Length: 300
Figure 1 (cartoon, rainbow, N blue to C red):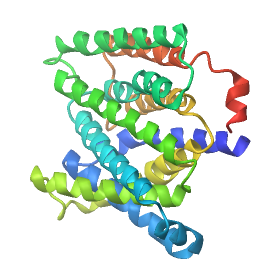
Figure 2: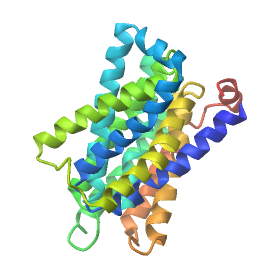
Figure 3: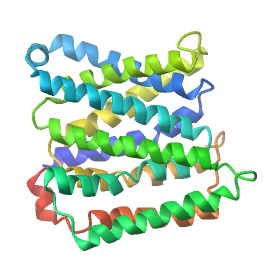
Figure 4: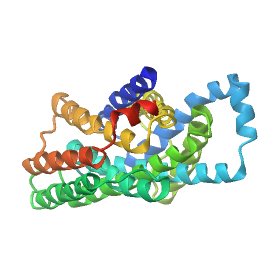
């Protein structure tokens, strides 16, 4: 039980560094998104080659499961394309808070499709989060000419959050049937191909990036990809979707603090970001507040 909780904790810390790596790159957002998934996929290849059990599982996957993983891979590509693009148009705090607001989607969809409980407290949490989104987005809109936040960046982050919620729900459905390495390899590979096509469509460079950018993105693939998203995928097989979403509350807090503390980034969030973000985080917490500790322990 404890190892699953520890894996989740490590994954949250690892993904908190993602926005810092991204802002340390000079490459266009779509190029960063492509190489992040490309490098992460390559890092999984040795594990695939060394594990006969994984190769056998990959060969015997049902067609329906493969199709679902392809869809999830496309959704993951959309998430990275939208979120990484948002970081170039808004502050780290606003972007990561908004993209982490996916429990607003996960909770009601889990209620209808996964039969997970949704109480009046959860509904209140969703309403509060939506109010916080309004404060953050609309409040910062008037400050677009003076600060880091723009309406375009916030909308991209919100859409990235929708994609993240769908990604979590899909992973929750499949991770009880498919092993971590097999699941991650197929989803990341599909996401990589999708992002490559998106780069071609939007004329984003897929070669001749600065050497420093390649190094930073590779480091991001190791830290935020393998120790972040892959560990997170592993945890999905043991911890319910709503708990996973609430656990991710640590990411916006960690990312915002890092963005403020690191000298070459040093982003100070606006009053509306702090106020709206705080409301969103409270709402997200309430969205899954009624889940009992016994339910959590039963699934870890």
